[in-house]
Length: 458
Ligand code: UDX
Image (cartoon, rainbow, N blue to C red; front, side):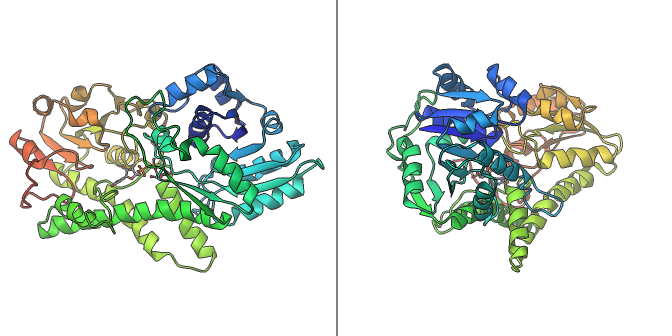
């Protein structure tokens, strides 16, 4: 099928490349001409594992091309995926102006019938507005539009795998024809024909995903409901961690046992510095706002947000309690990205931690395997080093803010010998308290107080 992807950000790039790999002819566009020029030159503006290999293959084989001309992309396609950003406004609502201007562009440029699919995360009822806009702005009699919603559930860091091995493919449609077209688009994934793409050697066979057909409004709600629930789960685990600190339990033992109940599930119960990134925090905010406009108080989510914001305070309290005066103290930061395997620092808890440390007069040196370049955009004058041991050198405290595997595997004995004071505050519960203690560290994490018996290594 001939598909247009509008918006070459994270969602558009991954979806466009993977749809091309799945056998479609894809033309991708973005209103940022410099981004298109970068992509046309074979460079990828984001770090996402495996994306480079997929992109290189599909571009070389002519299945994906980029154009700065949105009209060309629309005219040449039967199906248009809208993958533009919907950032939060000051009120927490999703800013839909990019969707609006894309709708007008599609309406103006279309000469033939199109299926227009929202892939960007949008509040419920956007589909209705989109349909209206397409009709109102259409200039050609041949242009007829059907609208569908097909939310993405791609996690940064594993987005390519998630695309080929999804748990579910959700399609919100108004008619059988749209459902059929979406089934065709995803046929290679639904039929398992595409289980192990060449660029992912030895990937395990994945179960066939559920193809969930709903109304457009339900599909829109499913996306917000999923991400908000994940945020709720994390905040729940974080409050459990706080309880453990006061009552002497070990949050890892508690969440492990709680998560063994299949009605609860063990994922997203990892306590620590809390959730960041551009999806969970913004989707929760948008969901709260959407509910408010519908006259419903989603207090449950407001509390999850509050708990999450408090995580940075709690981490800094631990640091301050140990260091007493922050001014002039040298602090090493391991990890800036909002989670491992990405260079994304948007709403990363680490950014807020660094900002507050600097405000208190601490001297910060930071490292991250992928996110230092982006961090330079926020803190141009901060000291960075690609070498974690250099970050530890002379430090009064070392903070673990992102659980990169590289950090877990450090020679912690050497780290200790580099530090002025062997204090480690682990915001991601990445290291084992007993081992750190045995190495001579003063070690603090979340919900794993010293008096709680550590889980024996299995
Ligand atoms: C999320 C959703 O998972 C994905 O389905 C959706 O399409 C996009 O938003 P992503 O933003 O990539 O994906 O991050 P995710 O893996 O969900 O992690 C979000 C944050 O929660 C990270 O900061 C992570 O460190 C934190 N987290 C996650 C925890 O603090 N504890 C956990 O147990 C899990």
